[in-house]
Structures are given as C-alpha cells and as structure tokens.
Image (cartoon, rainbow, N blue to C red; front, top):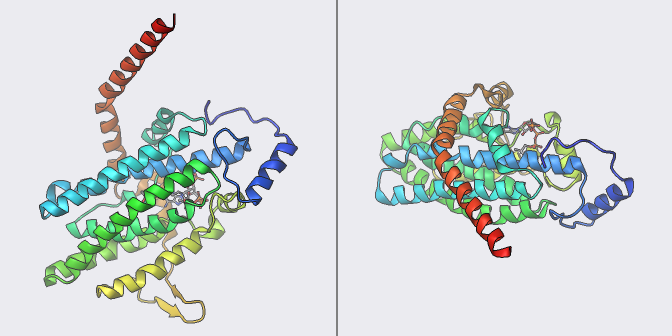
Length: 323
Ligand code: ACO
C-alpha cells in the first residue's frame, strides 16, 4: 500500500460515522475505517515529524566530540540518541497507516519530503547546544503535548513518551544556558549570541501564520491538531519570556511588550521570506543536512542487506517447519 492509492468515492454513511466518532472524542485506531484524506494528512505530518527527529540529530551531533566536560558529553549523547528513538518510533506509527518506511525515507533523501526548518541552521558554539535544548525542545514540547491528544491513537501515544524525553532535553539545555549566563563575560556574550540567532527560527518552527496555513482547518476539524500554529507560537513566547528574564538574557525583539488584558507577550513580525526560503531547500544548511543523511543511508546499506537476508532465512526455516 502506498500514498498514491486511487481516489474512490467514499461511502457517505462511513464518512458520517467517522465524523461522529471524531466529534465524540474517540481515538481512531489503525484498523478502523478512515477517510483517505485523513490517512494522507497523518502520513504527511508523521513522516515530516519523523524526518525532523532524524535530521535534528545532526546539528547537535556536531558538538558531541567537543562537549566541554564528560558530564555534558554523556547527556548530549543520550539526547541525540533519544531523537533517533523518536524518529524510529514515529516512522513505526506512520507505518500503521499502510505506508512503508523505506518509501518515506526515500522521499527525505530525494529532497521531496519536508522536515522542520529549524534543523537547517548551523550550531556555531557550545552555547547553541544549550539554546537548542531550551528553545527548540521547548517549542517541540508546546507543540507535542497538544499532539498527545490527537485523534489518531498511535500518534497520540507516541507523543506521550516523546514529550517525557523532550522535557529532559529542555532541562539539560536550560541548565547549560543558566551556567553560561552566570559565567564569565565571554560565556555570557556567547550564550546571548546563540539566543539572538535561534530565537526567530524557533518561532518559525510552529509553521506559517494561521492565515497562510492550508492544512490547519482540516486538521483541527479532525482533532489531529487541537490548537493552531499561532496559538501554540504565542504559548511558547509566553512561557519563554520569563525564562529569559530569569537568566538575564535578552530576546532579540526590542518591540516585545506584555499586554495586561490578554496576558500575552506581543512579539514582532516574523520574516516569512526567510522561512519560505528554508523550507524550499535554500536555508544555510539544507544541502549539508541532506548530504549527511544520504551518506549515512549509503553507509548503512550493509545493515539493511544483512537484516533482510536474516529475515529471509527465518521465513525459509518457518516454512520448512510448517511443511
Ligand atoms: N518547517 C518545515 N515545513 C513546515 C514548517 C516548518 N517549521 N511549518 C510548516 N511547514 C510546512 C508544512 O509541513 C506544510 O507543508 P506541506 O503541505 O507541503 O506538507 C506547509 O508548510 C504549510 O504549513 P501548515 O499548513 O501550517 O502545515 P501543518 O498544519 O501540518 O502544520 C506543523 C505544520 C505545525 C509543523 C504540524 O505539521 C505539526 O505539528 N507537525 C508535527 C510536529 C513536527 O513535525 N515537529 C517538527 C519538529 S520536532 C523536533 O523538534 C524534533
């Protein structure tokens, strides 16, 4: 089964029953009937999400050999390894929708699949590792704790475990940031520079503004998304501003102000041209990231060959036993 199934008219009674289940807050499971468009939306979102976890290992992996202490190295290795686990977990979830992981990975490697814009920025200093944990994993938690209530059961359940680990990632990042922010003037300058570079790309992670988001309305109607891109972005800003204040770091948005009525921190205009360039493949590191994934894929060919040879042997011996 692939994503390119032939479109057939769907039975209105089945569609109505499905919509009623969604309205009642029921969880949709792999063997349940679902509209083809619902299935395709989930494959799109889950595969992009899985790709993001896998590509997301690269910017941080870049600092494992240069972590400033054994303790920092151990937690960074553990974090990067967790991201690999999240990717594999979400690919498995996507496979419950009738797609094959190798097909999805093929789309990543041939450049036709999207993955999160944030991972196309370079990690220039050790402080970037702290700020990624604080902002990027912080943003992921805001987005994914809501996805843990998504209507598709396997995705929602995957998010519960993923978010537990993301919480640890955020804490390790914020701790690095707090130590540097209270360190020498050079350390403080280094972490402020990382904050300045990562702030706006982190806000872009939540996707285009609601007025330019073609998928949101349908995903909200089907209770896959429970909040819009702008709602989640605002929540992230509201949570992060006090955290920046607590460590005396400045967010690079001089016009930011607190609205006492809405209790929101109002922020400045996002550079959507930059966002669009990055998701079209023209960000600072898009080429480097895909080259690294292609190289890893080629170098892993022998593992895939060995695994399929072993599976073939198992099948043959089971068939011989059954005969
Ligand atoms: N980076 C790359 N592409 C993006 C981004 C982004 N930050 N935000 C939106 N897009 C893409 C969408 O995938 C969509 O592309 P497509 O229609 O060609 O597939 C297009 O831009 C328009 O966006 P929306 O209509 O707003 O898309 P959607 O409703 O799916 O919302 C969002 C995008 C918020 C990313 C949603 O898909 C989501 O919550 N996904 C699951 C979480 C996830 O993937 N997180 C990635 C980072 S996880 C981590 O930190 C490891």
